[in-house]
Image (spheres, rainbow, N blue to C red):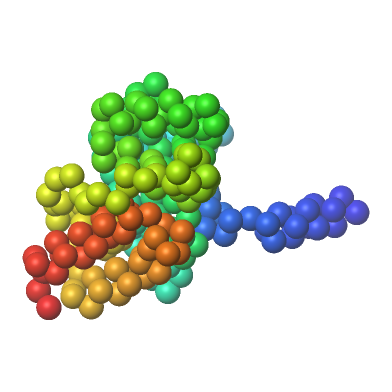
Length: 223
């Protein structure tokens, strides 16, 4: 009976879960299990194995790295936009936007964990220290809370990139690796715009970043 109850609970949870986030947790969990298993086989010490697993998990939480991040495949993939103050991840399949603060009072905190009051403090801090991060944060607010401002949106998020985009940044934004071909760039751009175009609940700023990434790569890669 207990097993049946657990199974029913899991089925109910899966029906409500964000499958993009669930996939991320599963990938992270697989790395933790591998680290735990390798440490246990090497030392036969459960304490050392647990420490290894916890260290790997902490590393992924701090850096934002996890298996499959930044790859595009049949299932979708993810890409990212990073500034000195903010690391943002875009899920190609679900259109979800997530992020983590890299500096400031709330350093290390996930955007999803911010309270309503904290969101206002973060926005003010970003506007004072990292204009690009502020625009990204506004884009996230537009997605999770469309009525967050009196004007019903970010208002000023439509301005273009504030500086020249590097090749590495362009690859990161489109979720591609060095060596990608022209068709890869066009396919990644098309996929992202389906999810993050302003008409699809995205923002002008995110769309401008995606378009800029496409332009940078098309100018610098071979056909």
